[in-house]
Length: 125
Image (cartoon, rainbow, N blue to C red; front, side, top):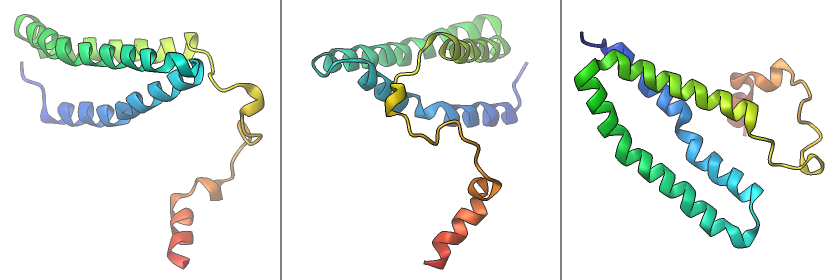
């Protein structure tokens, strides 16, 4: 069974959504560690990313060869969903309450959310 090229497009699109992960993790590490611990923490994060970049293609190729592409896609999706659930449930907010902007949690107007209205402000300049 072959996977439609549209599935690859969908997967690559989702990959783009999660591409910011590296920066977010480094920012979180900076928030939760003391300055003298940061280099060690950054090293551990980088080593974890490197290990996953080395092992994941090999594991994916093995699973694809022996069990098919469908299992690889389902497994990768399940792992991504479990990661999101873990982050939402187990990872606490790193920014202390007193440092958060007062506007957090306040509703925004449709004018603020409209990308065309925001773009028109740049064109007026």
